Image (cartoon, rainbow, N blue to C red; front, side, top):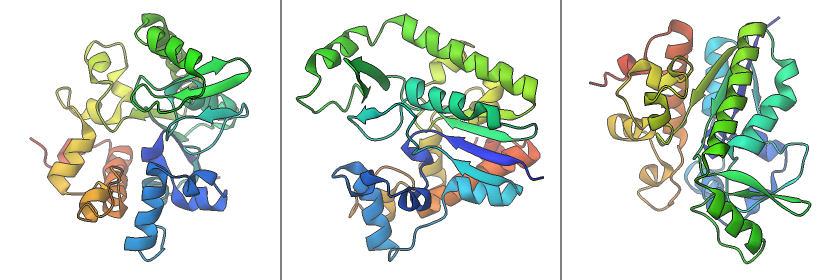
Length: 265
């Protein structure tokens, strides 16, 4: 029986084929989500490219399950684009953790630490400190912004991650983290996050910001570059997804640091 590659994360882990199959309403939502869909329609003649997750699963010969654009069982009111770390990513990990098998690979794309989920009465609202443009939930949003720097939230999140790390050791699946913008570098360098589970930082302890490395060394994205800024989307395009899949394949199959792959000095 083949093992499974599990993908969790924010919009940098999205798979447009899956989103289309699931009739994701955000594909037609005005905002940055639409820009990626416009890129597919206008620059790829409507042909949806293979996501990095799909390409990686094919390269390593695993089944493929992507929950980066999956809602948890508890309805969350999204006030910005993409999943947050705590309530969405960790709840999804918990929701599907009983399905993880020995030999599976679980990749979690952590996002900006300021993204969180807050309760407003009976409504769970997903928040990002840099993307709050709404007249709704004002009291809860103000409370969230006041509490944002409270160290309890980060400590609580890191403790939850440790639970999944322990589970991975007991069950025998590989658990890897990555992020696009380097927001977790400081915690990794302080050893508050396990460097050996952090794919790209594990490759080079002084390395920061994987996204810029892919952009600058490989000219592989974002979409705005591919389209000469006709489309302002800052996510990976077709070329970026291919390069990201190749880097991960090289690491997972051969445990070869990604920086060797791209000749980064």
